[in-house]
Amino acid sequence: DFTEKQKRQGKAGQAIGGEPYDGHMTALIWFRDDLRLADHAALSAGAADPDGAVALYVLDEESVETRALGGAAKWWLHESLSRLAEALQGHGVPLVLRRGAAEQVVLDVAAETGADHVYWNRRYGAERHIDARIKERLRDSGIDAHSFIGGLLFEPWTIETQTGGHYRVYSPFWRACLSMPEPSTPLPIPGELRGADISLPSDSLDDWQLQPTHPDWATGIAERWQPGEQQALQQLERFLSGPTNAYASRRDFPAEDVCSGLSPYLRWGEISPRTVWHRSLASGADVGTFLSELGWREFAWHTTFHNPPLHLHGLNPQFDRFPWKEPDADQLQAWEQGKTGYGLVDAGMRELWHTGYMHNRVRMVTASFLTKNLLTDWRIGEAWFWDTLVDADTASNPFNWQWVAGCGADAAPYFRIFNPATQQKKFDPDGHYVNLWANDSVLFPEIVDLRATRARALAAYDRARHSDVEPD
Ligand code: FAD
Image (cartoon, rainbow, N blue to C red; front, top):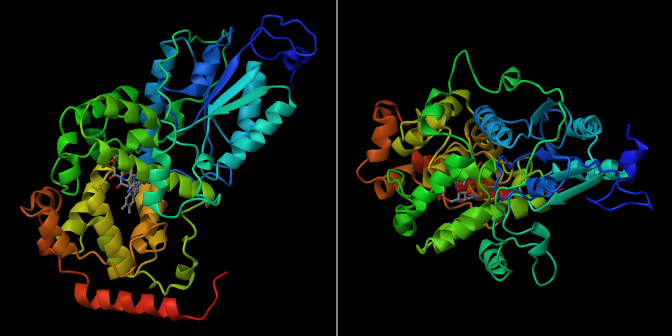
């Protein structure tokens, strides 16, 4: 598909094989989980190409390595893509939307564009195998394919234990990260960015039907969130200008507005972790605890890098033979809908359904309730969160579910069973959070007895531990 002329062209102004550069040089920039213009290494690289750039987003629901997006995530993606298209348009760069298996689409669009270079920022889950194949095929076709650090502070292969393995415990992992050279300072939006003089067919975003219509269950999500790069920066500045001071001491109290609310923006790459890192440190506030939470995000991604996909298999093989209970449909529905009769669980599950978000402490309590009190396989809860969270990502979601269930990296021990009533007294003592989301929770009969189900869970764990069945 590629002309000899295209094959001969190398880096701007250079010639390959003695052929003079004939002045044609166009970049294709493939956007994925990095829907922003600032600190976007692939975009900065593309901006240097003299004939301008074309941007591409591929909705890939076909590749086996890609996990189909949940409903709330699709809502966010629609908003985010429309903001990105506007921002790129401001520089005259078209955003081409295509649907299909990325491996085919990227090669097709590179050919249609006559691109000499294809640039992207790296992915670190199972999808990176798609990227490796594409890179090889592009290079075989004489096109320079180049990838850059993606949405992490540290590349996963640079953080190793002394024996060359990867960390399974958070504290030494984060210490190792902090002993590395500091993450690079964020790149500005490339000033010289401009669009290639070429018009390519693009799908219409509306035709992708990413957002619900009948019924429109996303009104609460739209009230709570404004996706986009501008909003991400504002959210960070708002956090750094006040809430950050109370973050370390009050972050576990769901009624208090002291968390950053940055997770969906980080998930979609509307802001880079490097920007969060450097802006936080420059603010002069005490941001150590906050940055260590970003460290958990890194840990989740590094763990996923070494064990993808994380949503299918527990990291601790002992749990492969855990006697999960076949979920009782009524109980599962009561959990999903926030009608368990336990105020903190119900409030969390309704906040999630209504806004696409749930406070971290409450995520832990609701996940513990499902896996321990209802003895339900963590994968079932993980799938519900995957569908309903706007920040659902292929690392943090399964990583944290495994952490709560007890089978994950540096996980809470299985016998640590959150008591939702005690947690409510401790972290929502005045009932502000529970009253906001589930003030009728007391009207629902409690679906299980906490003490009896706790004992049942511990007995099940004991059986799994002492079972002599060997894991695979
Ligand atoms: P802040 O407290 O302000 O933290 C700053 C940032 O650090 C967050 O935006 C997030 O990127 C990162 N972070 C904080 N805690 C964690 C953590 N435990 N693991 C990984 N990163 C963390 N987070 C997601 O981003 N996506 C998910 O799909 C997700 N699923 C979860 C499922 C369960 C069962 C649990 C217990 C936690 C999950 N988390 C997930 C982690 C955490 O709850 C959210 O990142 C946090 O609540 C987001 O709110 P915030 O941005 O205000 O966080």
